[in-house]
Image: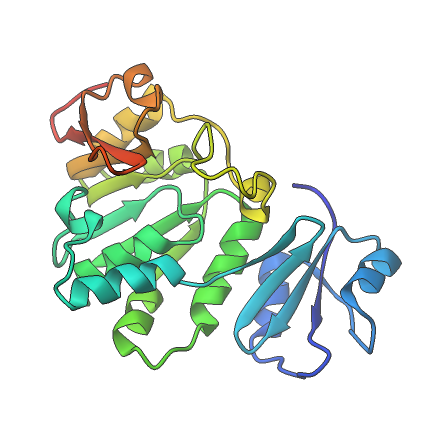
Length: 264
């Protein structure tokens, strides 16, 4: 995405804590809001996207809608887990344990990484890679400024370290066996839901399919296993030579698991 992005404040709030850091990190231009609406601001600046900085973090607005960090699914999953109603898939299938080092190579909005962070706990380490600069900045600063009375959720979010990086390049730089689990949730070839085929997330996301080289690098870096999430009926598992696929008939997604010592 090369379209111009500018940053402004809300009309009702002069919150600017962290704004200078955000502008320095992104390199995006700050435009005073005044009383202008976002459509007028976009038209006057020639920007396709406008980031509105607020006390809850950055929100990206554009023709296809808005994009911001919110731990909705992670919050629900951890809440159910804490009540003893479910054993989350991160623990039950992916195999995350307390004190694990977990590498999420396709962070997106971070739901799986947050759940993994909760399970891994204070002594664990969760790193989330996001190849899109836009997504990486919106999510990382959104995580930083997200506030909730649920301390267990906020702590899990704060422990996720977001890095803007291509996962193959990052994996090549890592020592062997430096993470317990290396995890991939690539953008599905066919969306599970057709309701928002041009949502901002899909526009900014990396649509490249995984390669055998990526999985072999992941196996070198992993201590226990490499896991790939995909649609249950996806041909990606067979294409990549992943034989162990776990997913119930009632679920639309499945998990391909390569144990340490495996090869693709």
